[in-house]
Image (cartoon, rainbow, N blue to C red; front, top):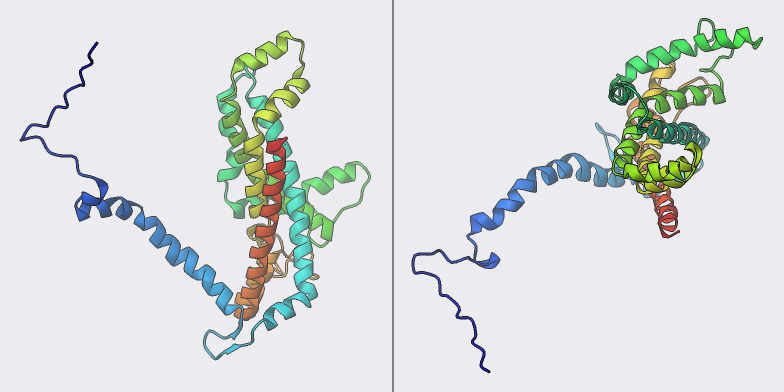
Length: 317
């Protein structure tokens, strides 16, 4: 038996030949990089250069209209010995925990409810939960400040019905932390719930129907179907909420109207970003403020790394 090889047809003389990547004209080789260049240019000018410049300023006694004296790590040594820095660190961690954990839990339950096939007006409720997210932070702070007011606030009025005296939330440590945490959680729970809901939409409805036929109740479906299906998105929201929670600035700035930068007479709700702003733009100690910014960056990196390690173990399990 003989086998014949297929005859390779040669291209016609008039047909264009496909050029390899290295043989393309210079314009075609540069075009893909030119399309994505605006993002990297903007990121470099407004992100990377200021970021690196912060590390540089942190090594100086920096006066923007005077002398800039190199002092090495003196700003960092001063920061470690400054009780105001540790107070702001404790306030930041406290507000972050009080706002992030309830926010994620409420968003998880709400996404499970909105994904139910029995829910009427589901589209209306899915759109309504975004209202806090699109509301101005300043308007939110004004409303919550009135609700938590010591003399005329709605919350203290409800506590009075229970026989509990009025609480000055702004002037107390835990009260101010609770008020700011409620503001942050109220603003972001709808956005987080929509992320969870979008992930749940990809879960086949047949799984829930089969679980119902097998006798699984709502809690069992939530525990064994909803939560495992949302595991990657939960990890993502934990990391992003951690980064955002450690950078809380606007809410404490607007809560204490008379002492904005210190957030109270004893700095009871001053966060790290607010302390950074006070030192840098309030007292014009730009070198010390830059050192605080570097410390905040290192803290965020460490927390994000811990979250990544924990999420890796969860995915492995």
